[in-house]
Length: 160
Length: 160
Image: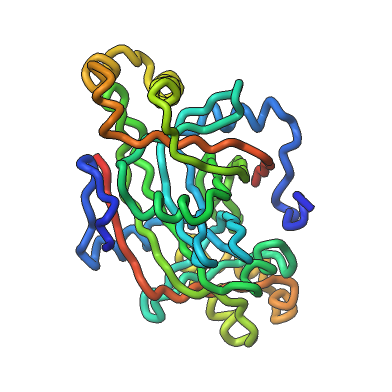
């Protein structure tokens, strides 16, 4: 089923370490949501937590995506490594993963802090700089929403 | 409504020429589909047709995405210009568009040819090379599916 739509120019990525590597290297995910059969797409920076097998996101406290998630927490997201179009070949070089899972708003302050640390650790070389400036105390967390996407299924693909 | 979820670090792109430019420069789109409230995401190379205001795609004749489209032709797609993560700023530089519309499989040979020409013109510097090698005659079109996404709505966003 997972390789149902593989084409000749594509190969499925099976190795767990490679799937992990793509998630570790990625900086943003494109997420498909849907509500009453109406699809919606959002792109968000993320931090990957290999222990929980979750992605954490940081976003505004209100917004259309939160309404979609409230109606339907099931999402399908992709992280793409773009190797560029291959001129004259009608082909694109890439590696990508597609994950399915549930995405929810993190409620507890303790996990909000944890999720933010996952993001800073994933994205920043020196997290302390951002931590000091943007997260001086716990009140900073009241202004933001932290989302967690728990990965239930992951597949990967590479194209020449 | 369109700027419902704009954050401080984001700005809405209003100018039609800039929205067009992002579509013209993009090489692939990430497309959110859904079927019975189950979201799915696919990434495909495309060609943009500014006259029809449509995106054309080339894909295998069978596959999970075609089943989703059969169940629900309504899609939401995004094209992203990735300017890279901005270290120390907890921010990402980008421009993106989000389009909503209907996506369907092109049936008529004449439009399949047209759609393929839109794609080659969009993606290739010298379309003739690919045309000669991969499309020697009309039989080549029987082996591929051409999809057309008609844009009903387009919004754009940029982040510092």
